[in-house]
Image (cartoon, rainbow, N blue to C red; front, side):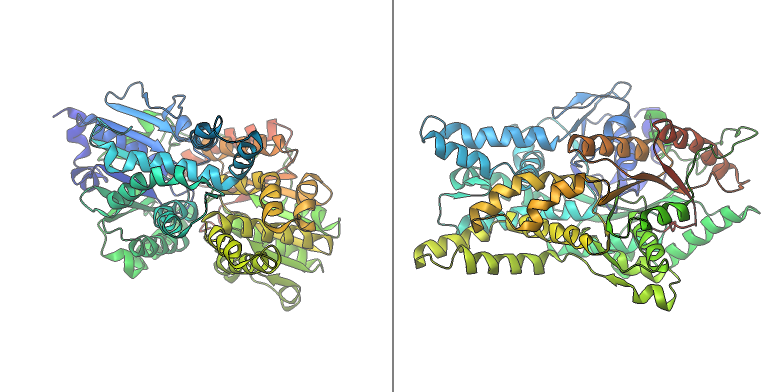
Length: 598
């Protein structure tokens, strides 16, 4: 046994490492540290002499930056970590390969028009999701262990998953597809020709069996020491148990319980103790690890290895003598007043999960209502936290009366969409053709179309007042926006025309007078750089952000605690990097307008 292996046995991840199954899935609310802990676990297992594959399934992956190596959809060695290979499941590349695999066999067999029709059916966001799961299933299923699949030769496969709601959709797909394939008598679907899907059925079933086998798969639920994050982990575990998964563990990441004379440190400690005292019942029976808050960012192998080190505290570096806020920042209240001046419009909070989008959406909506405007506050996030965020806002009677709160309910929207299609496109069909249409609507993609239409209607409502939309975590949101063009074809195919709200959506998202995108980030390397990637992706679609909000910052606060002081000093660099791009930037302090628990 190597020296590194001996060290990990007494660290906070010792129990997880000692009982590691072949597959380990790290999941939880966005921003809780899934990537860092997945990396630390993979590094520790490799240090024990195991051959390990680390895989990100997140459409907005930051695994490259954490490890300091350029990744691709095929495994590459991680320099400085013998035995560890890593890869990103690139959704777009996976979708391209998936489309070609499905369409290729038909190119010389069907007329060109029929091939184009199949390609159009495979052009939407749903295909991207399916293709990513296709590769995930191949790695996870039994094929990966017996020499026939891409996971062959690895002792462990560690998955850094997408934020919770997106991951649950992926895990539900094998069962949904199995039912769809069994009942659909037609030749095609919005996932492509059913013959192509039938070929994958064994792989999907094998993946689901592996997920449900506690001797093969461990689900590692990662949470921050706050009530929201733990509640999300509890909901996740409830849903995973309903899917038949049984082997779970909990990691509470970022605990800082040293209550020094520093009032900010005391607030951190109080929050952590309150969270540990109120762990939901469904999580109490799970093995639990507690990882301390560290004084350094989780970028690079040395920092990642420190998460599994036995010392509960690393020696913080001495902070610079003078660390101040940079010039050129916009106050939060001034941002809201400037938005209000337009008198109407759509405001979207976007960014990596866990950065406080929900809380800031609530604060913006409340600010607009206090200025006398009617506001519709809604969410597209599968993990809806609006109610919790609203409970923490002291609203006066006037602002509460002017704010309407809603959510886009996927199940209700899907049912309404199916009924509408059957009443329009299915109205004049004979019984046989109508039966085929009903089977087509049972495809897992129908929900994506229904939610997209609801999103378009919600944005359309901003022509009459303010609509503030708390969006899903970044990767899922980008899939939704990508659908603005791809779903035109699908909706036209099933209904005969494109609803006006859908037709107006992309032009309105591109209109800076109508839509204001607020990109939310934390003052750390990975959230800032991921937000910059989001900004780049939006630019490709012709959409420009209105402002950036750097949330939960220690920089505006006076802190003396050594760990917090080190983190505060590090923030100056990342806030400066945001400002350097000429971006309108708001900094919200920890415990300020963007609540630290959100």
